Amino acid sequence: DFLPLKCDACGEVFCKHHIRYDDHKCNSAYKKNVQVPVCPLCNTPIPVQKGEVPDIVVGAHMDKDCKYNPAQQKQRIFTNKCLKPGCKRKEMMKLVCEQCRGNFCIKHRHPLDHDCKGSSHPISKA
Image 1 (cartoon, rainbow, N blue to C red):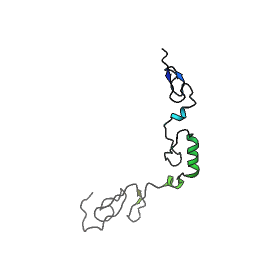
Image 2: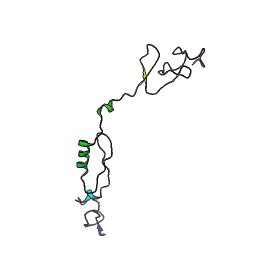
Image 3: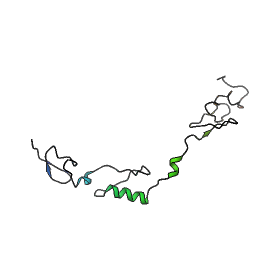
């Protein structure tokens, strides 16, 4: 069954098996390509106008407008230092004592574990 289908990019006529851009190696496929390229350094989508080659536009972005910061890749996740004297552990999330409002690690998070000075007696004996 040959059903004539016209390619919307190049205007040539093809059967149903060759109508896809890749199947007939369409030279005008880039005009209809609606993908938005992303900068490999800063992960920002780069707008490409019709008729422009995406590789050239992304390359120009990397040369001029890219906001890539290599130091940002090495930001530390565990920044919440335990306030218990002698403890050097750091946690990803803040674990704040309800009595003294101090930030502690998982091991010292309970009032009895960090010698809490917030009130005269701890709420629980956890």
